[in-house]
Length: 240
Image (cartoon, rainbow, N blue to C red):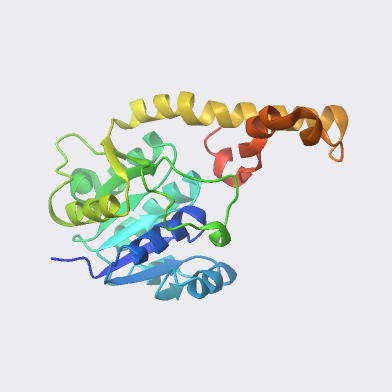
């Protein structure tokens, strides 16, 4: 059965880009966005969502897939709060950049049904900017989208299979990995580079002041090294 409605909780850079990508690739169903009112206003104006709702418990009504696109601590909280409200036929997924704690919460909430009702995910895509203003329908084209299925979880069946077909349509490359192995891998290939960039930028500000023309003096190498340091702290706090 084709997906008729998807809810995206968190319509910033990642959630907004997912919505725009689905639209670009002719998703015919309804996309419901859930966020703060000012963010939703911009998401509607950008054409990312068909309906806007500030209350997550209302936004999930009637959706076959619910994607949590908030920082990791928010995802864990939402799994706990929304899990009991979701119908058994609804798939809950996420885009969190660490997976072990999220998967633990899903198992706590859904128990033996967790493999039918939750699918952990993490797209390896992003920008140093945040917000719906920077959302890009091509953000996931060619990007790896990690999945962290539970043992014996049949991810290509039913609603999860439909959802993964859409991820592939928007250009993502699906890769399955165990949650703890994902976290170890991403600590090296994603999180450590982010921390190094942030530490370098902070040290330079402390040493020379925020107004020093260091980027002009340092050239391309310094610009590239510190570019991602402007990523929002709210996303990286939980990773650290």
